[in-house]
Amino acid sequence: MLMSGEQIDIIKARVRGASHKLKGIECQDSFKISQMGEVTVLAVADGHGSDSCPHSRTGSEIAVNVFHSLMKKYCLVYSHDADSPKTLEAYFKREGNHAIAKAIENEWKSRVENNYRKRLGSGNLGDAKILPQIWKLHGTTLLGLVITPTFYFAFRLGDGDLLCINHDGVVSDLVIDEKILGVETHSLSRENAWEKSRTSTISTGEMDVGRNFAFMLSTDGFSNSYPTEEAFYRTCLDYYSAIKEHGAEIVQKNLRKWLEETSKDGSGDDITVLFAVV
Image 1 (cartoon, helix red, strand yellow):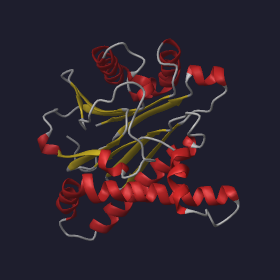
Image 2 (image 1 turned 180 degrees about the horizontal axis):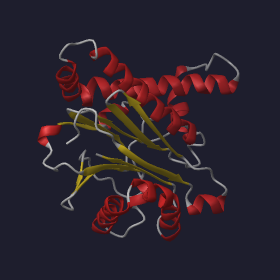
Image 3 (image 1 turned 90 degrees about the vertical axis):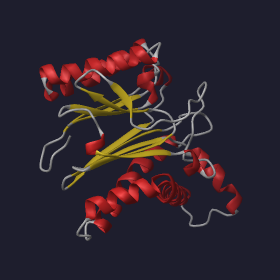
């Protein structure tokens, strides 16, 4: 459990997929990490990268920025409350799948539209019916995590992994989502995308993980590089064991190289991984 004033070690890497290098396609992943006092916010987004989504890298960058700006807004609003940790936690629990998810979708789409206007050099997009087409050009998933001394808030829209890895060798999903077959995924670009989002708000006292554990956010290029979920989870545990044995600095130094090898031998896709070691 994270205690007030304790340090969180962040280990991060983003690598361009091996197949993307061969095809001359830029990395579609984005991530962002920020600290607001005792609150740490992490976000990872995976632009779809298909022919129908030529601006998905921009879409993923906008997505992680939106998550951070909204989480900062919520934290600032409730910081004026004398009982702010409990009030903020209650709000996330009550509105995570509704007001917060809607706010993320609406803000992302608004910023995408503004960005597209700037690209056109015009303030007029014409018929509002073309807006869904513009959103699709920027299609992306989004994972987000807010870490506070008293609770954790996890957000998922689309594929990728949001995991907790504890010292007893247990790997668990922070947000349980429906499994999607094939390469399809939920996307911020779709109508009423918020309905497909999933969140969880967990009090630190509810997590029976002991004093040492790590959160991990990763795009699906990581898990898709392994033949089974069991093999993927075993790899996540290996990374956590390496962090405990050799330290965050050593793992950080080697993480990019390891993920490049994983992409080359596995999915060929872009891979982004963030560890928050508590």
